[in-house]
Image: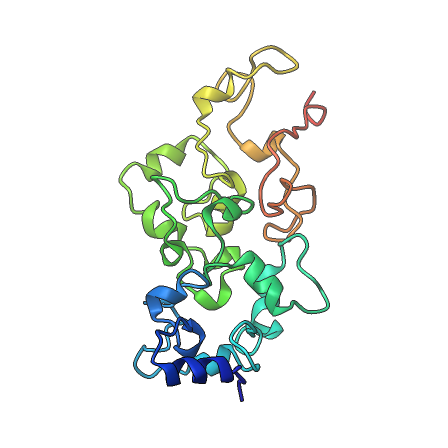
Length: 248
């Protein structure tokens, strides 16, 4: 049971004086937003049929105490934080939950950039556009890249010259080449100075099998290889690594 200091309030009521005691009334959904947004979110206690309640999040003697881990326990949250630096392996506290998720939602666009840039014209910060399987948001193979990209008329043409691109690339392949959402065209490749001048695919000496030269492959066994991926993006190709000695 929550306890209040009642004597001053009782005296004020007896005298008929106005009472400024906001702790006596539960905040409205709008008022609660300064602490954590509730309205129209999974934490909205007014949603029909929801199991969310004020006491479920605030089981202690005061509303200043809150618990996130009753619903967001390690079984559900640990797999979603596998690539999050600093995530405690021995169990996260509710205060740590709130420290990273003050809005009660997933990663902010700035935080998501560690994995893939969002909140851009091409990739709005709408989680369900890419993460169609909410239970496997950390699984690159569950991303819905093809839903937007493979259906575009120019997609087959854009990849026709990339000879080792699969006919129907999986999300892992998309991330392997486009981990930053970037589009590097073969025509631009030769503009980058290399050990033999501005050599590159299409110059008559170098094939357009990307992985013939860029042999460093991600370590997640997505493609059956080992190697160093891009920092913080272990599924991504490190395009700065190239193997010239293999042929030369």
